Image 1 (spheres, one colour):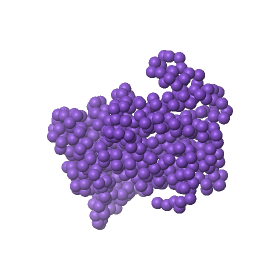
Image 2: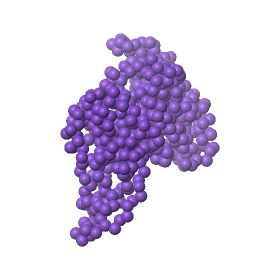
Image 3: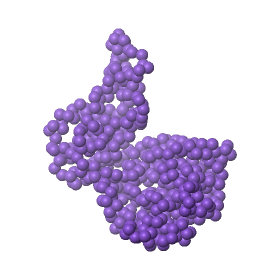
Image 4: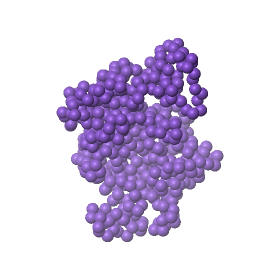
Length: 478
């Protein structure tokens, strides 16, 4: 990464003349020290993560970059969020930074130059000048907070030449060249099993997410009374405000889908109107300041009342949800929850007459058999995924290895069965068309029953309606 550019400006900016440029860098007091974002325990957790990585990949240096913000359009960029592997190994969140981890455990962070007071770029560089974008933690603060050595990024190239056969995590920083294809999966293999510090961060994310859901349902009576125009988008913003207040951001684009919009699994427009009697499928998660994210889904009636057919579908998904949670135990296959939940859904679909084959046939592992997978037209997605620093955590693992995982204490995963009946599906009776229900909780595998981190939110239909009434009766605030 190059040094801050004192001449970087937009086409609409007026140029600075030579006389002004000679004076702009002078006359500034030091800025107040910017705090480092690492929460208590982050440095110790990162040190333990580095030790685990070196034990798994001994004898070679490891290079892990944080990356840079992607361009949104023209000269605007998205907000920066560091690569998860970088934060997992450092506790840091600096843009354009690189970790060099030596085989003996010595860790050095290379940080990009700071355009602070005393430099022309401080005033003129709209991308990196601190006067434009705010200060960043100093090298000294970062070194002290994270208990690592810190150097300027300009020294990285020379240090890499003397590093021991370095492995580079690719796909993040093009300046570092091609990556080692084995490093990403190796890191994700370790990240899949969380330590207690990480579990606590996920619990924080789930607690904040529950408050965000309460904020959302508290808005419903007023929105419905006002006609509900583009209410999905209002609710999306309501939850985002909670995420920004209590954490870093939302962990992923929120899915807020009313009525038939819920049958689009990742409903992206989020611009629909709200009407009494509709179901609302809300799939949302707060990402904490330490960057661990929740991923929670509830489906509830916008006005708190259920039609018989809505209740029938919701109860079926709830039954599948419970069956899946019961299989989240150490020693079980990762797919055990999926198979249990899908069997329940297939059984209901068979009894309702939507599929002609019984659940045992629908779930048969031989996909060539008639009826195998018959239920998937209405269930569509898998029941579980790993969760952590990323909403779909550890995605660099090979799919076959991922699905063959044997659960052990510390694995964190979702259980999220769903039923989706499309409005244009001729195999579906009219009363079911446009109904979508998904229920999702975040769990940690223990030595016994799983710990449900998101259990502050009820899941059953009656419990949801009672919780909604309580949330709507309470004054909302920060």
